[in-house]
Every structure is written in C-alpha cells, then in structure tokens.
Length: 108
Image (cartoon, rainbow, N blue to C red):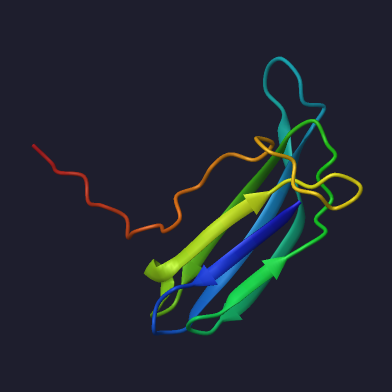
C-alpha cells in the first residue's frame, strides 16, 4: 500500500500517518493494533510518499492527521499495490482530491 500526502498550499504542514490492522477481524468487534506511525513535515508544493506499507491483512485502517499553518491544504491518496507494485483498481476507497477544513456543526 502507498499513501501520499501532497501540500497544495503555500505554507508548510505536518502529516501524521497511522496504520492499524484489526486483530482477528471477522463478524463482530475486533481490536485495532497500530503497526505504522510516521510524522513528517511537508513543505509547500511538495508530495510525501509513504511507500511499501504492508497491507495484506484482513482489515487495515489508515488515519492521517494534519497540523501546522498549512494543515488545511494537504491532499491525501491511498493506493493498494500487488506484488509487482501495480495499483489495484478499487482496492482502496476514493478520497477527495482536496480536503477542506472541518465545518462547524450548527447548534439549535
């Protein structure tokens, strides 16, 4: 699996990647265990690639957290790859090309 974080803004941002797998995934609850955690700084107009992440497991979750001045301008993509490093179409969910800032939920 490969995860890419692109800084499409003009300010630097920090990107925290956490990958978990579900132990004994099946019907019902399963405990998530983290097996990848990487924190990097991504300069403006640059792309950081987290490549060769082992993902041949029953259930894998990817959590990307951004921070810093340019945090709202990080675009993330996730791609599954086969043994020959070819992208497997449809194996990873589509993620919007650009993630906007979180919207405030109106209160009544």
